[in-house]
Length: 474
Image 1: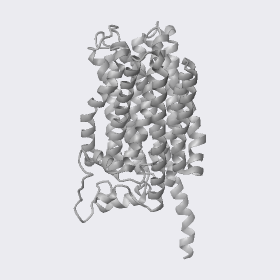
Image 2: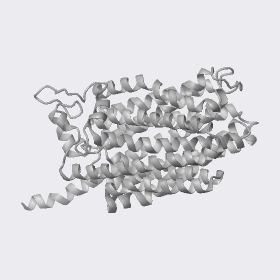
Image 3: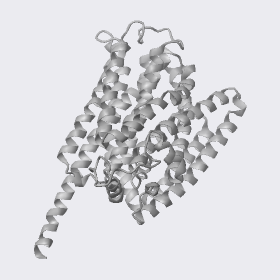
Image 4: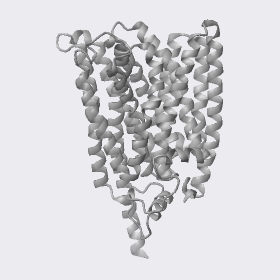
């Protein structure tokens, strides 16, 4: 008995050490992912406008919804074939390598941005747009799926805030670098052309993404497997059904409707809880698309060339990342610990409604930029980690397959819907602009609030009962 009591402090110290080490490696990986993604995402709009044209941006969002379908099906098949950490490594390596290929073609005299003739037949602009649109479901989303699978609900309350703060630091540094580079591009013209500047930025972005597999590999080697179980009830379930990650059992692996390429989609339709997470993504992304298109118009109006347009985008996203870093570091952990996921889920639709009301009452360029910045900073610094924690008490197929469908189709469907609304509202005239937007925003925020309320209640019930959502299909 005495030896057992003596060993307890040592076990606690070892546990704390490896938990901290896990958070450190996850934070470094997330730092690189968001830093690289920020650079590529802000180049996406400027390169698309320069090669294809601003008027085709709404159509690109609709087509992205269709183009990513085969990729989602292939990814769902890959989830069943490889381990969780390998999935993240493969996805990051793919986007890092393909990003370097796009870096080369940016400088091509006819394919790249040296050709200033913007028209819808410029295939490069479309391909680059679809490629960057894939970052969110196949790199950022897969990282979160992996993090959720190795994190318990209590660990998530403590670690997700600092982890997101590290990602916001990466986004702020890369956005600040891009902003400074393109703002001072006039002085750099004797050394490096505007085309070369865009190649440099995308090259750095791709290199950072390509480093992620190495960080995840070191994490797996340095942190013992018993500290990577995550939600213990889900871990035991996967072990019982013979999941490859935890090792085979004596019995052959069982199969259910959640397996296969369409398993993730089936789980969304089968479980209101997962459909509710889809709703959270849809409501935010549609609002972001509507106000983002207005921001795009402001940037195109005030920028003299592609470098000026890139500088404008990097400036606004830099401010969002800095604000998001402060929110995630000082607010996310404290609010999750004190209020819990249930109340924290309600904060984002409430604040979004307040900010959108402010924009409707002012209707100025300054108010629009402020609303865009505040909503992005709160979303990525606070709302996103809270939303991601909802996946913790779920089976692997929901964490990886359903999440990929939600982050790809929930996001893309929302963007396509928002773009359709943008196209529709453009033909209404100035007299109907305010009523149309007010009705849309009020409807989305109201539904968002209701979905958040029921999701928070269901999450608390699952964790209190040590329940695994999705397990009943077996």
